[in-house]
Length: 468
Image 1 (tube, rainbow, N blue to C red):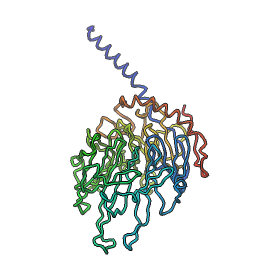
Image 2: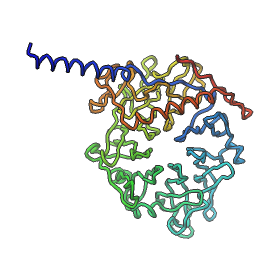
Image 3: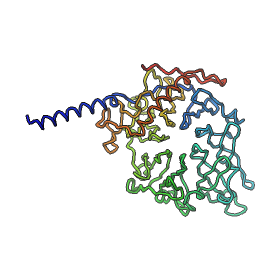
């Protein structure tokens, strides 16, 4: 054999061996989670970037810290769980809670109930409907609906303006759907920071950098068909919020559509949903950013699409999907929680639990920046449980050997059942953060195993199983 050919063969063989040695641990380790039961007859609502968990326990909302402390928010705010009680929706790293409350309102002699946005802190409960800016929002704000709060305490949402047709009119009016931004000191129209003018806003989110994303349509539109045809998807310039970038979707979904933006992380990635109104209301989820535009997410095999609930700064997305029951089709769709990692692989979270697991994980409401997932599931008797999923593999972005379904990063979003033709490569950002992630989990795990007895109705917590 020619010496040059032999040398090339040897080097090629050596390269392959070296490559396999490098990637084989990555390929072998599946993303795995330990499941922690946060309590029966309870549900997780949201999780902050640093692991504060907002829960609904029996008849009150509670805030659970990583060291196990549980605060009864209803008792803290002096309110009961009743029709006119607060509904907590989200929490930031400072423990500030965002939510809405249904209250009675009056215009002339006409009485009705409308939603108010509130910010709840340890020593205060602030109704933002009482702190609207009349110069930018008018004097007759009918209702407000919060959408997102960042870690700086900035809040964005939607408000409706009640404009009487005449002085005597009761309900005869025009409802203007606009966006707002504010904080605990008050709220103002979103047009004070975004160049949206008098356009109507249908969805709006904000990240910690003050970047916005959302949807809007002209204020001259009157019918749903016109709204569907004219809605624009936008994201603001990350360094200058006075400039927005429109993300076209007509080349992706050409038919009539309804668009909503669900979340925006600090890397500028947005997630949301497009509903094709001409295709039996089929919903399609998407991820996007300024550089790449919009990418549709392929749903799991045999599913009816996905619901996206959150994206963290690592690009991990959680939510739920629905499958038809093969055992009992008459019972309707079965809901399952999923994780989509930054490399594009999607997993049924029920297949990623290490140790004893007697729960069916039905939905994941959020994922923090350490990879912890707040979820909800049912036990064998159908009882609802709030669940916390702790990542235990050294590489939470590795591919699993036998998930029920997955999405291959190099097949254009096509799902490949029970195998894969790609080996995920971690980004430098992910590799650099793994040491911090693992160190944080080592500190967190003992606290989660401590007694949680800080309130009279103590949610039971299972010990984290030994997975060694």
